[in-house]
Length: 75
Image (cartoon, rainbow, N blue to C red; front, side):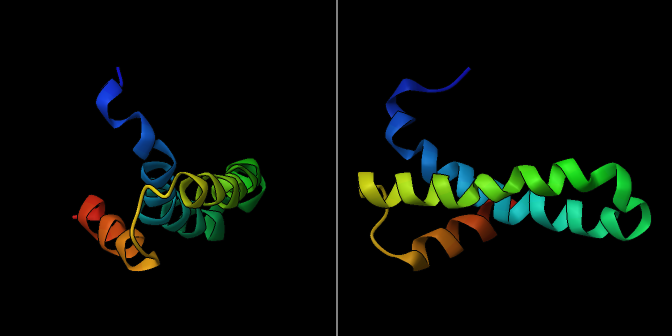
């Protein structure tokens, strides 16, 4: 379930999740089993769309905030 009070932050949260979790994990595993993870790597390409939505909604003050949020989620 998603907290409806956070709905405007969804694009930013998706970008942070992709940056901090999905992409590093998929890239690491792809070296071992590239043919199986190809679709997952393709899936994270929608990061650009989430970032565009975040920028349109002005849900963050700067690109630095994305980096900080990504590091926080990864911890």
